[in-house]
Image 1 (cartoon, protein in one colour):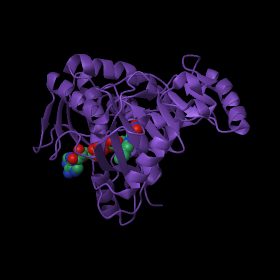
Image 2 (image 1 turned 120 degrees about the vertical axis):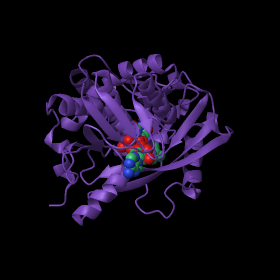
Image 3 (image 1 turned 180 degrees about the horizontal axis):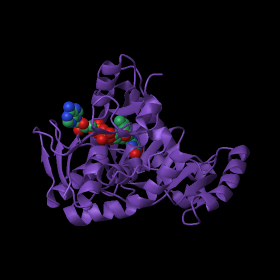
Length: 345
Ligand SMILES: Cc1cc2nc3c(=O)[nH]c(=O)nc-3n(C[C@H](O)[C@H](O)[C@H](O)COP(=O)(O)OP(=O)(O)OC[C@H]3O[C@@H](n4cnc5c(N)ncnc54)[C@H](O)[C@@H]3O)c2cc1C
């Protein structure tokens, strides 16, 4: 039985721990702040694909991960007895003009091949998706690949499932066996300091949770905003994207602006009370892609970092490829996801 120590109990660290534990490794997770203390303790939870065109390694990886998510989160729910809030209900995106409709029509065709005929990019009438989408939106794209989960609940459910599998999750302790660093913005800063040049940084995001029950509706993506109905009768709105900030976890008028824009997009939410405001730092690697593989500055260790804006969407496959590498020495990670892609030249 292999020993694996994962540092960091966010979605990347816990997903690596899950994949390794499921394959029989003896796993310990160390995080001084506990599960979900970083970006993974958030509230948005869009598991949404890139557009089905101009295909590349990153899009293929994300596609496979989104497909894997359904099984992974069902297993987590079963093992933990907790609800991660996962449901594949699709995503609606308004089509504002004829050019957008023409583009969506082309993408409907490319989606057929790229999504292997299993998921679809339909053009539909907005009034099918009321009340989340205003009927005045005209036509919309409805894709059947997108899903949602509740990040904070999913992270805690995964931690609970790991505990059932015998994984220790501790605040401190010694590493044993193979060591994986999945400490998000902490390690991006540490690597940047060690190398004397930026390897990545935290990009702040603010989000809000409204008391608005649309639990059976697909998510809405419009004008850069994610509106995500959760299974518990709340609806999340996200997110700001801030490179400069004084307070990484504080919320302010930028969030008020997003909430106002979301209410305008979705008049049914006009009077829904805001019940939570949240902010966190997305770990963004210099390449903007995940950093997976051998750790560039910690000799003999591995790294899983750079989830940036889609860490939850990428996590199932990140866990799988890291377990391939750590437990079997099988490297299936594409060059664009290797740490070297984010290192200073
Ligand atoms: C506002 C917002 C909205 C988002 N929306 C989405 C979305 O809709 N869909 C999506 O897929 N993604 C979304 N993301 C991105 C997603 O949340 C991140 O990509 C993901 O959470 C990153 O996970 P992580 O495990 O790499 O990092 P983190 O969750 O930050 O975890 C890092 C962990 O490392 C721990 N740590 C720090 N130092 C040490 C140390 N020395 N030793 C051990 N542990 C340490 C921390 O306590 C923390 O728990 C969003 C992010 C934000 C901020």
